[in-house]
Structures are given as structure tokens and as C-alpha cells.
Picture (tube, rainbow, N blue to C red):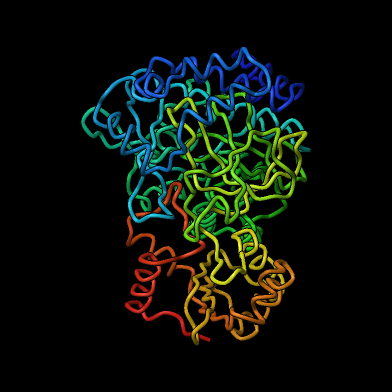
Amino acid sequence: MALLGTLLKKGIRLREMMEQEYTSPFDLQKKELKELLMTASQTEFGKHYNFGHVLQGFRKGDKEFYKRFSKSIPLHTYNKIYADWWKLALQGARNVCWPGRIKYFALSSGTSEASSKYIPVTKDMTKAIQKTSVRQILSLSKYDLEPEIFQSGILMLGGSTHLNKRGSYFEGDLSGIQAARLPFWFQHFYKPGKKIAKNRDWDTKLDEIARKAGDWDIGIVVGVPAWIQILMEKIIKFHRIKNIHEIWPNLEVYVHGGVSFDPYRKGFEKLLGRPISYIETYLASEGFIAFQAYPNRRTMRLVLNNGIFYEFVPFDEKNFDAAGEIKPDAETLMIDEVEEGKDYAILLSSCAGAWRYIIGDVIKFTSLEEAEIVITGRTKHFLSLCGEHLSVDNMNKAIELVSNDFNINIPEFAVAGIPYQSLFAHHWFVGTDDKVDKKLLKEKIDEHLKVLNDDYAVERSAALREIFVDVLPVKTFYDWMESKGKVGGQNKFPRVMKNAQLDDWKNFLQTHSNGNRS
């Protein structure tokens, strides 16, 4: 049974893909917002903010609809929308921000804050994610892939499908919620299957997959890079093989997301018998936002006609404070007002009942015509102690470059800004199991960042006085995550550490006696 053939036979239409291909981003988004507002107009949120008045603006010209929308509805951080609205839905109230009662809540990975966030997952959101997933699978026809891949299975490594029942709702990772509600036609292709997917113990789950790996013909692997790499290492060790292609000869595609793949690329390729295609996705707890639509491009196309309306906030001092918090009067733009090459934080209004909600990611447009983007970081995951404006994108690229310089694998790292000699310094925690000279590593990281970021180069001769580097075993990073209860699924290690999280990390390192300052 071929995957693409099954999709087409089951009536999966290409209309939505063609609509985005041949319609302007502005027109798609205007229509999307109108549909969202109409659907939610009789919810408590819709009545409170008078969606009827906003909808009347669609009959007028000069973007009156967006003027009314942005003026009527305030910007929402998680804390604000949860306290004012989502908390009611969590308690079982109906028709709060979206019609009906919310039966599922996704627990976010929580890299920014210590506690998890509860993100509503509606039936409409689940359907939207499934439709976008199908569009991504259909886009594989653009890749030069062996036909066997479309006869093979898809291994999806996510959270447990055994969800926690909490009164009137279920909670768990979004990946677990989605896997538990897969459409029937997909069951034939899905691995590791329902039984293993229900397992809540992450280590046991990985061991079970490793044992069963030889029984499956896998063509596509989906998951967060760190955990997929760990799984492949387990499979290779268990079956005493040299590389993953000895057990999965038809493996052609790895679909990844959640974090930049660049730090993992070198270590990942050592586990393969031959090159494969890497496809990036942007699937957040709040919805399926974008996916890589073309081979040989490190960009993703925004999904503009499937349950999400986007707004973009220029990521600068005018709109965000020093801690990365959005200001109440921040400037917001529609998709026809953005510019290529500039950093923007994303606001979402969605069929899950998010309204003008900041998800914390920062993106950059690479093509306005095709609505293609790259993720450059997070609003709170950046360093600018003295004007160096160092983004996660800069950090990822520097790590990729030093990995190539020394031919080593650095799958994990984190950076902190610290006071030093009445001014400032950066403290890097670099995770690698390969031997490397810390002094040379420090010099190369610093050297690459000066080329990648002009502001950084200026401040290194002024207020940013020093760079410290600790080299740690990779296991240290995963042990810390395990101590926080954040193992597996969509969980990933934070790239920038600040305040209480940094103190906790340092205390953990001191307890484990790992690493020495260079």
C-alpha cells in the first residue's frame, strides 16, 4: 500500500495547496481571519471583544478590518490569556475562546519558564494539523526520492499517547495527543504503533523501539533531533550494526523541528550509511505553522490558509523590553507589511482559541512572494547585555562552524550572560563527547561570532570583556532535563539561560562536578 496513493484514494484534495500557490498571502490571510472571527463570534471572548463590530470592517476598504481587529483586541502573553480565558476552559467551561468544550490541553516543553503551559487543542486544530501534515507529505513528490519510500513506514518519536486525565480534560505532549488521534488511513504506515506509543517511560520506550526496529521497513523518521539521535545510537548498538541503513535500507527522509538542526548535523550523519533528505517543520504547541516546501532550501513556507492568522512584531527595543517581554503598545504588521531580512516576533490567532497570542519565536522572511521564513530565535532566548544583540541563530551557526573546524560533534550547548570586572562576559556550556582543546574552542567561537554579528564584534572590544567556555559530556545536558521531568517527546535544552534557570543549572553542575572553566 503506497502512502501517496493512499492519500489520493482517500479523497485528500490538493485544493488548499493550489490555493496558497496561486493566491496572494494577504488575500489568504484576510480570508482566514474572517473565518476565525465568524466561527468564534458567539464565544465569550468573541462577545467580550465585539467580533461583530470587527467583522463589519471586512465590508469597508483600506484594511479597516485589520484596524478594528488590532484596536479591539489586546495583545496576549500566555500568562494573560490563561488567567483571563484559558483557565476557564481548563475548568470545563464551554465556548470560552472557541466553540465547544476543550477536551485536550498540550503541555508545552517549557524551555523559557520553569512550569509547563497548558495550550488548548480543539478538534479544529487537530484537523488543521492533520491537513498540513498531509500537505507536507504530498510535497515529497518534489524531492528526488526512491519510490520505495512511499511503500515504507513512518516512525514518529513523540510523547506518550497515554494521556493524563484531569477532570474534564486530557493533558500531554501535542505529539502524543496527535498520535492518539491519527486518522484510520494512516495507521498502516505509523510506527512504533499504538502499544509502544502509549508507554510513559521514555527509556523503556526507546528500548522497545530499538528491539522492534528490525521488524519495520522505515522510510521517514519524524522527531526532535536530540532524541532521534539517541534512538538511532541505541538501535545501532542493540543490533550490532555499523549504521542505521543496515536495518532500514529505505530510510530517505528525516523530518525535524523544535530546534535548529545545525548543531546535530555532523553527529547525525555519522549514524547514516548514505545521505538522506532533511525536511524542517515548524510545529509548535499552538499549531502547525510552516514546513519546508522545497528540497535544497533551508527555509519553510508559512501555512496561510489552514486555521491560523499571523501578525508580526518588529523585534527591537521599541516593541520589547530588555527581558524580551512584548510591550502593550507594540507595533503589529500584517503579512503584506513585513520586509525580507528583518526579525519579527509572531502573534497567532487560531482555531484553538488563541487571539493575538505571542508564541515567543522570532522569524525572518527570506521570500515575501512565497511567504518563506527561517526561525532565528526566541524573544527571551537572546543575549544583549551591552548591545551585542546575539541571537540563537548566531549561536547555532557558530557551533556548526566550530564543529566543522575541529571535526567534532556538538549536539547541545547553552549560553549565559554574566557580570565580569564591572562589565560583562558570556559563559558557554558546550556539550561534546569528542576531545577538543578548550582554549582553541573558545577562540574559534569568538572568532566566528565576530564575523557573524557586527554588534558582537564591536562590544568584544568594549563592554563584553571575556568569553568563558565549559566543555561537558552530552549526557550532562540530558541528565539535567531528566531532573526537571523533561525527557523525550518535544522537550529540548534551552540555548540561552537566565536568572533562576541559570542558577539551577549551575547548582546542578556543581553537584555533578562536571566541567572546568577555561
